Length: 152
Image (cartoon, rainbow, N blue to C red; front, side):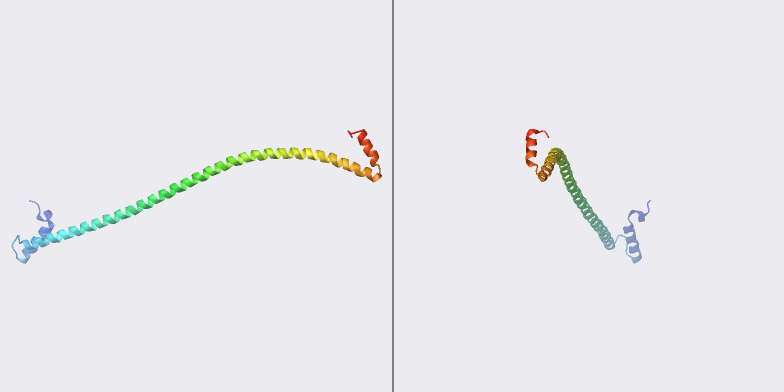
């Protein structure tokens, strides 16, 4: 036969109390009190477990909300970075086209400067000759010589 203490410790304890009090075995009042006590204790324990589970659930919900917000924040940041990347790629493409256009314009300007420089040096040489001849009073002879030899 098994030990009665192993079967129902609360009932065994109640029976021990009843025996000490001199009550006959099976008096229902103490048994009811013990059952109520055990129920209250189990309910209290159940309430504690329920409360702990509710607290844990709230904590997990808060953690989940925080992680979802962080995911949304990272997705937004990722989208902004993609927009910046596209903008940079577009500006690089635009700057390459602009650079090509500016190079062509620069080549045209350099060619014009080269031609203008040659023409200005020839003009300056002619002005120098004119100034020199004017000083000497040979303007008429100079003009005749130019008309006679236009290549010089």
